[in-house]
Image 1 (cartoon, rainbow, N blue to C red):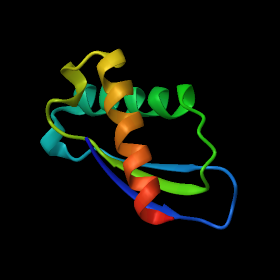
Image 2: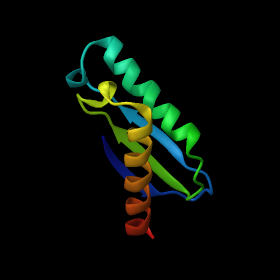
Image 3: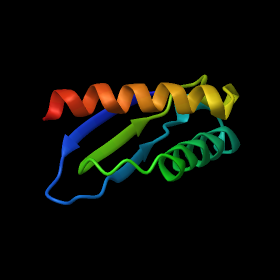
Length: 83
């Protein structure tokens, strides 16, 4: 998973998801997008950022708790660079 982050003029975060055909067939791409939406929903961190998640081929096979840890750490690192 790769995060692209850009500050916005609002207090809420906004999400964009990119899951290309390299992730796999439609079922795997949809699972990757569902996982990203769940990560975003469970981690309501109001930093005022536009977050774009680039899904990778391995992403649909990884369990949710480990994705949450990776997502949070990547988001905080990116937020520090934006401010």
